[in-house]
Image (cartoon, rainbow, N blue to C red; front, side, top):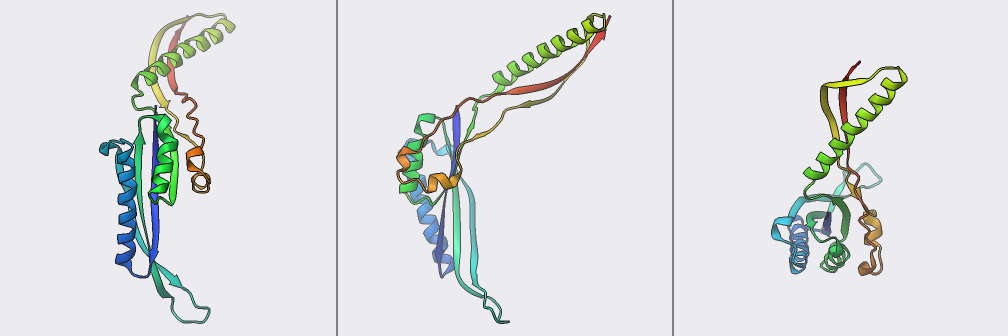
Length: 193
């Protein structure tokens, strides 16, 4: 019931401070665009700030020369309204994002779904134990021990970032959240009668 998006900007300038400043201004524009769409400030987070030199590698034995710098800033946003994903992609791109990753679909509150998956896993363990016991001419008794060996809440990713970056009309980016299947694994030891 929520989607996580990441928007980034990479800039290239000959001076390190100038390229970081340009990336910072663009990231500020992206954040402002997200807030203009009523994305709560608590759901917006700077993920990464990087700066690195660009080199010119000569073919002779001369050492590489720094020709400029690149800076990158990534901002993530948790979207609580899935119908808003396409609009958010459009706004972030218009604000200067030149890198888009996501959406990653998740559940905001998954405790109830996890519990239901465990109940289903235990019921399935009993059914299987009864089938095996019946085949052996025995009956399943009480539970001797039980343990959870894992509950999987899959993260579902939509299209790759390249498809968003190349979209001619970002407002037309199709977003289909689909469904999330939560599964549980349990180990149950039953008494055999």
